[in-house]
Figure (tube, rainbow, N blue to C red):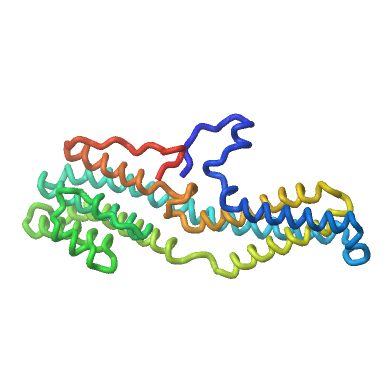
Length: 302
């Protein structure tokens, strides 16, 4: 995620970090060169009688493509925003769990519960990003428990079950009555719901037909556009074509990034930073030294 103060107009115009331009620049240049070739052939009368288009068909196509890309971007942004709300709600669940645990649990059980929940958050981050997070897990966690979790198909769910074991043991030992157990367990339910929602977003992409249709239509439109512009724009045809290509290819690329919000692209969610917030919340609740919050590196917060 890009985190920075809003730059001035000129710096905003020239901003590179967080832009989709690096990803689509080859396509823009290729489209511009194709438009330049069409313009050259047209100016030397090689296209006379072959292509005599008006801008009306391209206007209609452009409006239709703009609407379609807007709808697709709205759908992908909803996925991104839903993921952000769930991971933001996880901060609430951790802090509430720490406070509730202080009320009902012994210091030893509270530490074990919060440690396992913290490991659950890191393991979920690793699952969503396809990364090995063993080195990020709490050092106080039993190595055999870590090995058991990583050997399962769903390490995050396994660790959350083990957090539930702490409550079960306290309840069976008579340290927690049913009301207190339910009060603490509701936050584990909240964490389980966040994991289920995150997995749903990660494992259920938009229908591939949407991506295919938007991608093909954008390319067809941008490569046909020079034939409609050359008669009125002349040698400015490559410039106008490149601007249109930047808009449509950029929207297409941006929607691809927002569709999967858990990666490490510049516009993806800062899961590392959110997990660090959990570490701070747990450490402060347990009276341990808290780590520093993660800071953006070149405006990007991971």
